[in-house]
Amino acid sequence: MFTRKIAVTVFAAVCALALSASAQNTTLDYTISVSVAADPIDLAGITDQVSFGIGGFGQTLLSNFAQGQPRSTVQNRGYSTVDYTARAAISQGAWTLGSTPGNNVASLYAIFTQALTESDNPTSGRDVAIGDFGSEDLLGSTAIRASDTVLAQNSETGVEIKGNRVFTTQSVRSLRYRLDMPTSGDTSPQVLTVTIGAVAL
Image 1 (spheres, rainbow, N blue to C red):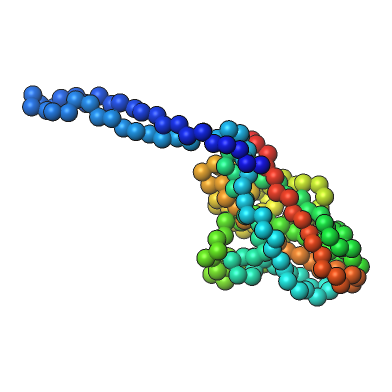
Image 2: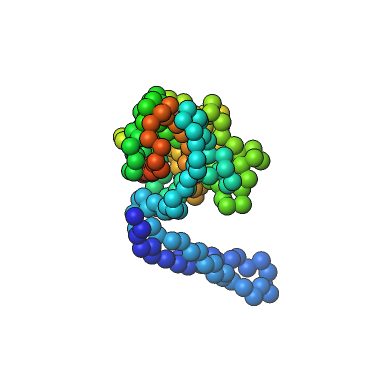
């Protein structure tokens, strides 16, 4: 959802006391600008399709390609502190999502991390590991809400890393993935759609 922003400029005048009889300036003008968000939540992000490429049955695939791909990066441009949410579905193909991989059943996990950019190299300390994902990070058709432990890399503690209590001044996060491939089944290309939302606090 994109909304129109209104720019507002505030002028503040500060009086200065004369320090001596020869002082020339008795006032100073300061300009302060502020942008007003029309809504408490206004999500923006890059929605281009990303890919795990080719994986084999029984494999676990992680978001550790160049720039932490595949990843989904989101920003709240509204004015409220938010908790991000996430859900997933198979939008093309014969697979389903479940808690345990099986025939045509895959498991997709996600955690919010500090935002990655196109210049970031995840091998410089930004890799995710299988152990970073727990059962509380499993995505399905019902949106789950980020907390200190849900959709979270539990070993991280920085406020700019978790997906909950996201302040408007540090609102960009990357959602990184772990995909446990089915044990067997359909070999045609599959498309998973992840939906990121936000709840105002």
